[in-house]
Image (cartoon, rainbow, N blue to C red; front, side, top):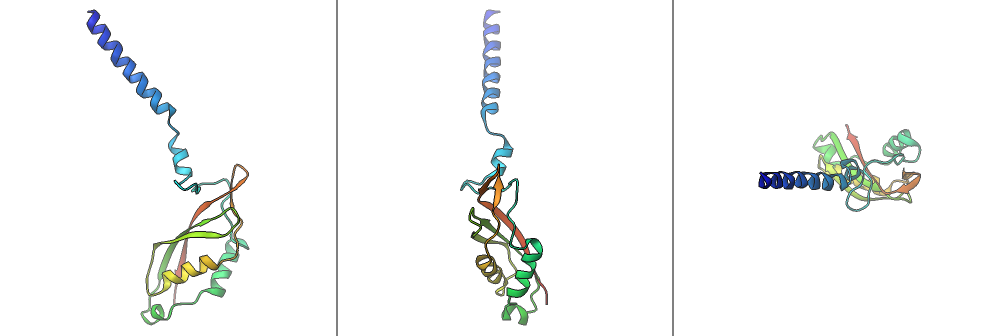
Length: 140
């Protein structure tokens, strides 16, 4: 009987230790907020391009050149780009998530790289590196 109680006590203690271990871990929400390089995925205030969304669309309209190869091949579609807006508003770590080829992907990368400084994202009132993901449409 004492052996059975002892085994039961060990099982309870194991369960309690496992529960305490998981309580000590940061929540999934914390993991979702930052990537391994200190770049926030979720912030209190998202980065804003100069002039807001209208300003971004105007910038694209004035500065985008439809690549000749894409025009000749009648390529249309949506390029999805991701990049980091740094604390000083500059863009970095520019990558294509979904491309359409024929020079369109490179054109979007150029536009983001050369874009005017953004208003950086903020977390708890502090400027932080923030990952952005945006679509850019190509239509003939």
